[in-house]
Length: 162
Length: 183
Image (cartoon, rainbow over all chains, first blue to last red):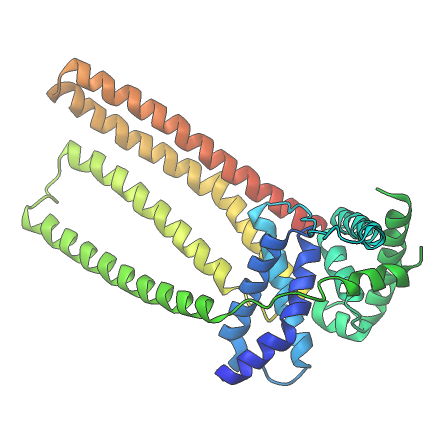
């Protein structure tokens, strides 16, 4: 079981961390805590995994619920800019532009309602709508409509600003 | 800008995410569980000893001070019990549920907390103040005036501070409930 958990942890940490990061407005410290909380729950419930869905979907279910629980802490994370090494001016400019776009994306995601935020983060991670329906408990049809609406909202916000 | 571009930007980030070691978290968790079991054991033993002592000194024979003290201690015990039960309920919500079912359970939890905040807690505060009133009556008779006023003032100050924190917590929980209902 320990080996199984270690494999799951190594294979899924990055995806879980990135989803948490999106949920807490790009705040790395909060995202790390949330990712750790998620894996604590994965570890505690691993014996209940019944292969009804893929392990990835199962972990995402725990991740989104852990994120939703975070609401009670009433904290709003703030985007932590990564350090940029200033040895190549062109690279620095490109990297700065990339960071600004990311910051804008995080700010726009933060403007969405809790459920919308979770759904769009799953879309950004590249999950299929069927899988998103399984994680959220909405019907496939419902998810399709929701995803379309949120995608439009996010694109408009990132392009034109909040 | 297309949504595809946004998705690409998203997926390109954190490619060099360092995966932290999970072993310290596991060890810490095991330690916490062990400590929780020890705490529960110590609390249980303390309770039994207190009850035994209560009967040993025949404290159950009625007196005004006993009534006052019983109200004060009773309210504190009930308040702690409510909080412990509440935390247990929150912890028991199954994280393996779908997001919508999990959210529904969270909403139900916060609705119960709201009911507690507007019914049970005010009653407990009133009973607690009745207990304090009874104790003050005896303090007034048996202790010096200066010390009595010191107790009255410090109680009033601590009650205001306590009320402020209870109010803050209730408002925060109401805000959480509202966000969940709107989500």
